[in-house]
Image (tube, rainbow, N blue to C red; front, side, top):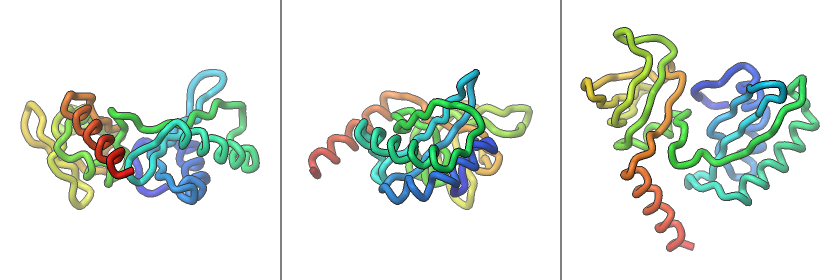
Length: 174
């Protein structure tokens, strides 16, 4: 998978395995996660390049990936396959995600610590040269993309309004 955040070894292997199929079907792979209890869940998040992902898209992708996983059999035990859209309060996993959502609030968790902290909340200000700049209640902070372990948009009225406007524009185009 292209440079991404938060992939475990099995998830990274599966991302590499399925990404060509995901892209051939016209989607972008957002995140792959694998884990859980007795019957782990393989969660695959994807979307169209325009940021949309409907129920029919999830079903189509699920069918294709299920067939691929049956043939390749990359996991040793039984698992549940879950294909979904990233949702409104989506994870940010790729540099392009951070760039796309500049001006919105996010929660970031680092692999290590900066000044004794691993977690930050604030407004995404810019993303250039693999550096995320954000403004928190404590002030400005710069974070290296490679040091981020998790990142997610925060659900705010501003985010909901922006997503709703985007959907309205897409419907007007169709």
